[in-house]
Image 1 (cartoon, rainbow, N blue to C red):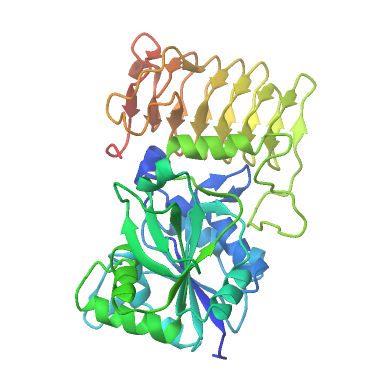
Image 2 (cartoon, rainbow, N blue to C red):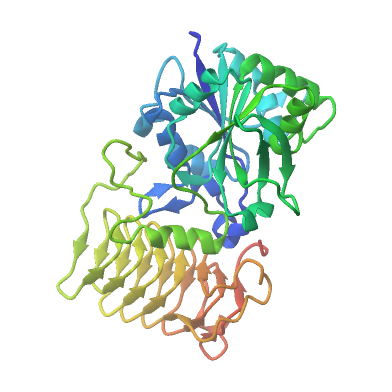
Length: 425
């Protein structure tokens, strides 16, 4: 392979357990977002928009749909003979296979892939954040400061800094200390999990740390190791929108923000396009009695009812007399006539019978997972079915093909869970 100045290793193997039922059978980076995209599209689009044309995508948890979505990288112009996108799954090495057991361990297990391109720099990325960023500008900063490692940081309110990995810096933004979720943070510079390293420095650190930690992680191990060895690390201050959609509430909020007249995160900018794979070519259709306000509709939708302040994915059908409000409907959802759906997230291929009311009643936290479902959002998992004329409350979780007999007197009260397949997540 021809030498590359910088290649990217994109970490996309996480489960995203705080997203509950949405990631039961799906890696977090593969979840749909903003009507037509998947979360990983934003990082892949950042790469090609930044001139980074060689990307290794490290997958592990439930990778099938993610692998199918990425394919050979055509939507992102990453279908290249020299470079492009490569899926890097755990594989047999020697006599046995080995799972990725940490962010740095995943990169360590793919050192041979990196060596094929003999890069000067390696860009480490996560596949589960929503943002636009020019990695070329970060590389310019890295070179200008003569750093051996550069970490992208975001200024957060100091009262929230204890939720992040915090970089303490000197007046020239050289990193002098790193604290993981400190009780009393000395700085508000939160790590974004985006790193540029000189490859020779990173390679040595990966080999050395692997001797000490089987679960080698960038935040817990590599960054502290480099600081201990007095390696020159700098903080690159990112100015712009960045969101970790790692919880049900933050995922819902980020989608709803897109429906604003002038959204903070604009999907329509010509100079920084977000690319995705889409199998839908048919246009949207709004029926004679259909009505849509302050919403995003993807291609292939058929709207015969009313949709307000919602994000509607591709191939969704909303029946006559149905009202959708403050909700996210992912791809190929089908909703029959005369339903009311309020503040719900319906995953892909969900089918709803006629006369169903969802999102009703009091906001009672979910009885099994109150730490995940407590803000009033009801969530229905992939390929689930809900029968005619049932009423479903807030903070409910439904997964599987359900029958009328599964609902006591036709009701699933707020905070209740109905799982017809698998175990709770």
